[in-house]
Image (tube, rainbow, N blue to C red; front, side, top):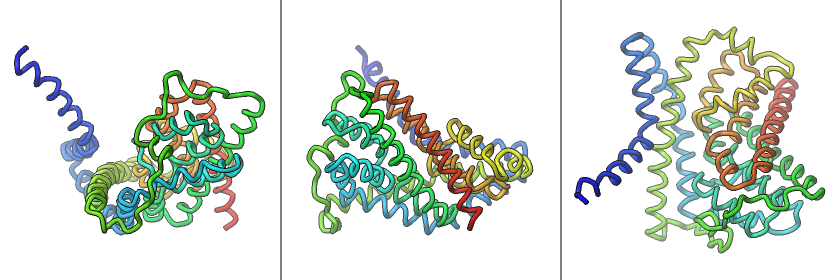
Amino acid sequence: MTETTLATPGLRSTLRHLWEDQKVWLVSAAILAVLAVFDPAQAAESARFAGKAMLNTAPFLILSIAIAAWAGATGADNLIAKAFTGALILMIGLGALAGGLSPFCSCGVIPLIAALLAMGVPLSAVMAFWLASPIMDPSMFVLTTGVLDLEFAVAKTLAAIGLGVFGGTVVHLMMKGGAFADPLREGIGNGGCGGAKIRAPKPVAWRFWEEPERRAKFGKTALTTTLFLAKWLTLAFLLESLMLAWIPAETVTAALGGEGLLPIATATLVGVPAYLNGYAALPLVGGLLEQGMAPGAGMAFLVAGGVTSIPAAMAVWALARPQVFALYIGLSLTGAFASGLLFQLWTAMA
């Protein structure tokens, strides 16, 4: 076997990882390049719009990065284990609260959920966490406040926790009737970094700066979070600029504005395929709200899209049996519609 043959798989792997890391930046660059050729004025306007939006969001961006880095360095995510002890009703409530507030990274969710279910934690409590987790976390709260407003951020947090409690309660009632006796797919165990946090949670080191290893983790997490948020927000702000320039406000108002159930139902369904990323969705919804989108429709879009986004949905599909996955999707759409409706009623009364 030649040296070139041996090197080929490694080269392919390197190129694949490079593409995965840079594809969002490349898409943003491609958008600006195409605009520069066909509409130079819009290219300049979109670049200016994205730059200005990033500067306006910078204080919230910095705070959200600091929160994510702090959580990683201190090991605050180890507190998640405490949510799944005690009475079942308490576990459902704490599971929803933990899902809505915990700074869990996507890589840890799959082994974490597998560990919980394999260790015998009831599906109802796990479902509460599962539904709430993709919608909100501390960094998302800060950025939602900056891009939209504090009222929207608080309402979205309450929607995440409420959806978790609702879903956990529904599953609990169904399990009392004999459903979901074996929710995991065959061969799914409880390994991985997420599982370790449940089996043997480590104490939280609040004074993380006293340990070199934790200081290094703070810096690494801050860097990776900065790059992650910067690339997604840049793309989102570019898309928002094009949406504001090319989509007439009356079109948005006709489809997603006004009162009634139809705009909220439409936004709930549109949120499933149109959702890019939790952070990228915020500027897009902000632009739609400026053009006349109903607040309740915006909330429904964010909740439905967050729970049914590809990473969140694939985590469920990879671990759970098809009937559990179907219930997850059904609960997410029902809860998103209810969240949008309640938020619409709240804003109408305010």
